[in-house]
Length: 321
Image (cartoon, rainbow, N blue to C red):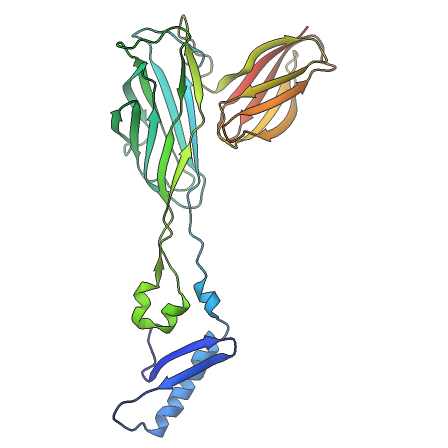
């Protein structure tokens, strides 16, 4: 249907079919048989276009979009020694859970003035450090197809010119800046009715820019380097507590991705686990849980909160006196 009728200058299709048609011939007579042919062709076109309205042609097709999940973990995950030989790894993982690809993307990872960059490991050869300046590390990334992931670790050392003191807390997080979407053909009523201006109507921009913010993980400087779980299990607040049975205990964790789906459970001294309430982290990545200890026997319990997308478990040791 890309060719215009030789003798049809313009038509429009409405609910009742053809509204008007203008037949034009310049400086010559038109044989009556031509009108028969035109009428037949016009009838066929009416049948083809009658179910379609201007609104139908103007509908924008669904553009495939990326949906990005950004994780962060730190190793060692319990404490760091303020010494030149200390190495701390900030590990990231980016997953595309959408139905479209992400591209033209990079990571921006801030780091503390008490640290200097060391070296990196990446999962894809298309990943590379673009710049390191003013406490900000930028890593360029290749395009990421739906269902795939990219990961890497940036290793830092204490800054010899600004050595951290015991008690100094470090926070690690990053932003992913990416582009997604696609150019798709959109058949508008104007492009159907006016082929001379079709090039201005046949395509539309479906490209958008996005930012994915990772969770934040923390570790402090102490007397030694201590790693327990490679960043997979982090302490809740409080990390340990002892109460009498019947006390309400509220636990919080700020290591989750904003809005992440959280599940919680309690494990008794015999190793048996019982599911607790599910919920979501707030817009700052904080999850909280209040536990009623009524009826709990004396002993040590583990209360845990797991972030589905964060892939980190927050843990507290609860002792019932």
